[in-house]
Amino acid sequence: MSSHDSIGRVAVFGGTGFLGRRIAARLAGAGMVTRVVARNLGVAATIEGLTAVYADVRDETSVALALEGCDAAVNAVGRYVEKGATTFPAVHELGARNVAHQAGTLSLKRLIHISGIGVNVYSSSRYIRCRARGEVMVRDVFPETVILRPSVMFAPDDRFVNALAAMTRWTPVLPLFGSGNTRLQPVYAGDVANAVLAALKMPVAVGKTYELGGPEIFIYRELIESILTRVGRRRLVLPVPFQVWELLALLCSRLASPPITKAQVTLMRADNVVANEALALADLGVTPTALKTILPEYRL
Image (cartoon, rainbow, N blue to C red):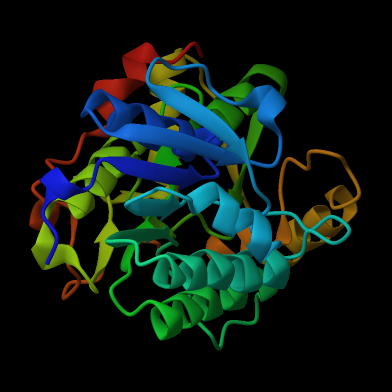
């Protein structure tokens, strides 16, 4: 199996996104020639040592061109909302398969595929089903793929903690998903980037699946309370049935940037934690970062 020394050039699909930017920066910082691959080059990160190229994962020809000369690839493309032809099947199934197929065709030495905890081909959620099917398709055409499944991710510029904190500024009542007892294991986005680097370095990771969570498991209600403590505010927390959330997500679906989506509501129905038997961050040599360590960096 190829060593890390032979992986010098890496393409990061979705390299302008919340996670993709961090992955690209981490790989470049480790000395890899890192190529940011995106549909919108106008927002491509300008980090020393990186180049930006166009590709749409739905178009296999553009994927092939973006991978020319690369030793490895990372697929960090993700969508929570469907718009026009940018559907969940197009991105998470066809797109994922296109990247994996070209990785095999071009004899890449490593492919890292970013998925998520909780994927299930039998889920009632179209989003969750498509993510799960994408994993199957990727492994079918490139069996050596390393699959990383992060839990909900946090970082100072996230849309998770920041969205919750923003609500505390304009409403005296904070709605809970259901009873607020869903368990979450938030993972620092920087740790996920470190996990990608480790997966590229470690031959033993090839063909395996890792679930990535932080060092703490929160009840959703507890997480809300931690954020309230951080911002120094007191608010009433109110249980809201999932049926109401689903209606709200439907009403918001027409917005350009919906604050809540049906996929997110479905994910909050079940615990989002690392399975007991799963390979995890520790197996990649990454020490998970606690949310309380990063919270002081937020501008809440």
